[in-house]
Image 1 (cartoon, one colour):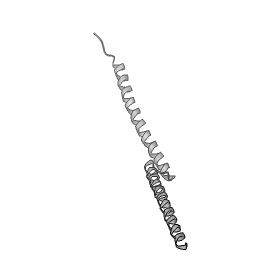
Image 2 (image 1 turned 180 degrees about the vertical axis):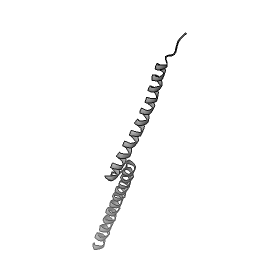
Image 3 (image 1 turned 90 degrees about the horizontal axis):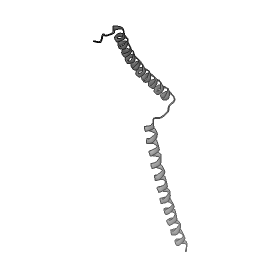
Image 4 (image 1 turned 135 degrees about the vertical axis):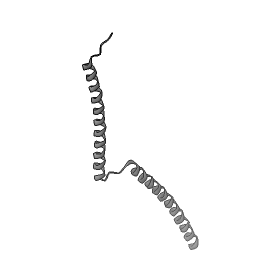
Length: 89
C-alpha cells in the first residue's frame, strides 16, 4: 500500500499554481508591450500595411492612366500635325 506524502502534494499544487500565474503574467506583459508599440508607432505617423497597400494600388492606377493619356495625346498631336501639313500643301 502506498502512502501519500502531503508535503509533496502541496509542493506539486504550488508549482501548478505558480505556472498558471507565470503564464498569466506573460500574456499581460505581451499585451502591454504590444499596446506601447502601437502607441509609439501611431505617434510617429507610421502607416499600416493596409494603408500602404491601398496607396500603392492608387499610385499604380494613376500611373497606368497617365501612360494611357500620354499615348492618346501623342496620337492626337500626330493626327493634328498631319492635318496641318495637308492643309499647307
